[in-house]
Amino acid sequence: MRLLATPILFLLSVSYAHADEKLKGIACRSVHLGYTAEAGTAFYAEATVRTSAPGTYFCACGFNSGYFGIQELADGKKIVIFSVWDPTAGDDPKSVPYEKRVKTLHKGDAVRVGRFGGEGTGGQSFFDFDWKIGATYRFLVAAAPDGPDRTAFSGYFYLPEKNEWKHLVTFSTIAKQKRLDGYYSFVEDFRRNKVSATLARRADYGNGWVRNAEGEWKPILEARFTGDSNPVLNIDAGLTKEKDRFFLITGGDTENTTAKLKEKITLPKETKPVQPKDFPKLFEKK
Image (cartoon, rainbow, N blue to C red; front, side, top):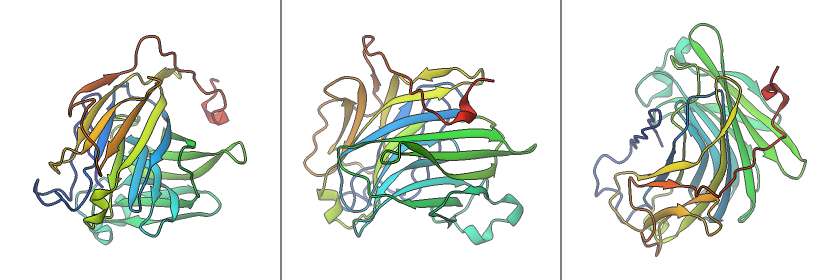
């Protein structure tokens, strides 16, 4: 799934949806939350999957150069995935000159790293993790300059059973923007076998924070609901019952009864986000 995002105003294009009718009845519509937040050096978010199905990607931390989340594969296996794009156009990873490819600067234990294509090209990492329905998982992306024309993007996933952050990978890519921007989350059905369209997928996203250039953590309070060009309307988004998080749902018998497409969803003023205090030490003020 190739996402193109611009700061604040969230625009989204999906490379496989060349015609509106192609995916109707084949796949669930991909649905997204585009967050209102300033450019920064780190992006934190939490995700809780409520309903899943084989072939689903729940992205928690999407940004201008990649995306980060959890997947249930077609065989039911569950993984954490973090990807960063090459700066070039095209879908053939072998055609990208070596000097323009994403480089791996760090790879954690038990993390698999490779290249991907077919939806843009870039570097991709996988970590086997048997995540559970109803459990809340934590994601953190950091950006730092890597020489004069590259940016290093690092993905951290919190391991609840160990009470510690795991540094999965750091990818370096050619990027004119030295900071994170264009923040988003999404739910995608990538199985697309007709049966998958009959199964609902839902996730709650929240407690989002962005660390700005001055080192201050700012909460994410607003999101815009969007979808890809699959025209089906069994999608929905809004605030959870507690009104402290956003939700996305697509597929099955879902009805669009809450937010409409392109509508902004805002946390109520009485909601007071609580900033986590256990970020990796590299984010401590010096």
